[in-house]
Image 1 (spheres, rainbow, N blue to C red):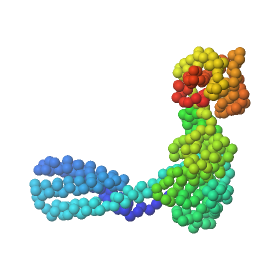
Image 2: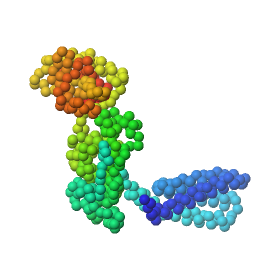
Image 3: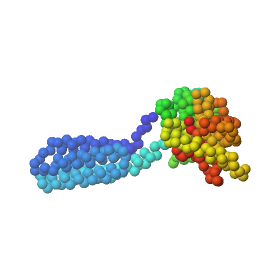
Image 4: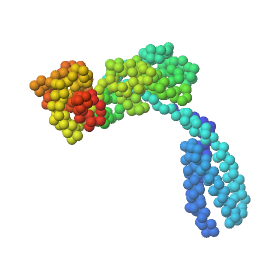
Length: 427
């Protein structure tokens, strides 16, 4: 939306334009001036052109340092004019130029640069946006959104027809306005002072190049959520009526509305301002309703499943060391003490058709080359098993192990390469 330029800004822009015009004039004068009596004159005009250009650019950007460049330029021009009076002939035009330069210095000194910079800072709205990545497009209309917003904000939110109630929509920037929702799918506006929010519904992938993005995501659940989403819904802060913007309150307001909009159709929550993706889990809605939703979302419900290159020589060496030192784990497990509550963990390969995931299990028994235990991870792709299931794998599928030996944690060979804590898994 185009906004009118305020008076202080207009005055500065006109001065900037004049400075740029004079820069061009000075260049042209430098080219045609070749007075042998004053050989320094072309270089003086080129210097003046450079200063005038810098002044114009600085004023256009509304910077404070432009004033000092301009004053230096005026002092320089006054000096060259006085030199011309001393070494060339005296003329009324040169005396007049001194008065013009004095006026220009006064004008530059009185320019409201402070107001321009202040307006620029106040008018700049930091975009805060959170997005639900969805399996399928969400059906939404004004009355439904108003109902959900009323629940989210524990306040009466009115659904209005923006085509019929332009006056109501015009109060959206009024801090004393009531709460209401207007618009129609796919674009809605939500006014709930001190915030004016925009809600957008998309029926296509949120990211322009999903394939390139997923290639850079090492965590498999996050990667799968991005790959599988086919629609999205975003809630954006358009205006925050109280200065300065309170990030925590803004995120709390956005997140509480997202909590009412999220359901099993949701795959992940994206904090667009920070570029962070949080996989949807059974605890996501509680996190979104919390007092500090961003901090809560950072606490993962699932153990991370990391994708690694199985031909990485560091991983191959780590797996080889884990298998070579496997007898240490077996000995510690067979001689474990009931008083020692530390778990004995093994990471191994689990298959489901063409899919393979390396996941952790808490060992409950080892017999005839077979490892028995309870699965400690929720798979990202496998559907035949889930966290908490009793599973068993052949010892040959061993990938890593962690256990206490002489009261010290041992193992975690691949974890050292990946730089993560125990309980992770990789594919």
